[in-house]
Length: 220
Image (cartoon, rainbow, N blue to C red; front, side, top):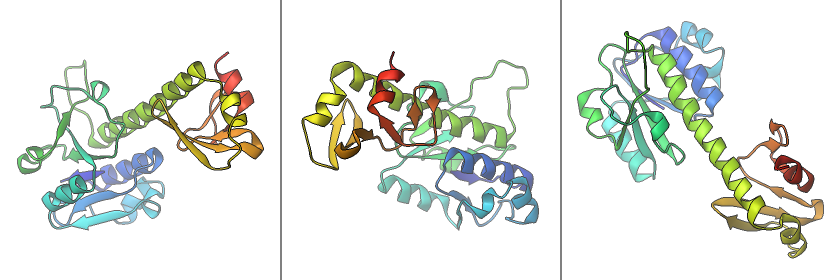
């Protein structure tokens, strides 16, 4: 998550809190024009700033280039975008850029972004607090990644017998890619370990192991 010109300490802390909850790997801010990482920011973040790295850099353009060369897509949240976050594919490796409430993302950075996205609004004010906007964008990305995993899992269940797949191969740790879903075979426990998916028949759980029984119950 990159913040361009977010100078309010409480906004910064609230953004960090949402970012940590959404699983963001790091926050990048410029040396100048950004909020201080101080006691007020930490308090507003509910301790998130003790858990998520905050990286300062003198040149966000250089950061953009580094991230792009590392395989990340750059998404900028701006009211100038024609495409909303709900119509955009946010599933891949990505960096999200949020601008200041007064000026938004600076023109020099905006023109370097691969994707512009907006948050659709119906009211007359037509603007959101930057910390609220950041939370909406981040959790839409998280929602898309979770739903895509569910869709792929359903596709696997509908097109093959998972039990037959497990019984047909005795090797532990065998990896499969089926309909875009990565599966790891752990035969001795008769389970599929599915990286990044946390499911049981009732929905999300804290366990990343889906048993054969859960697979059957999930799609009854």
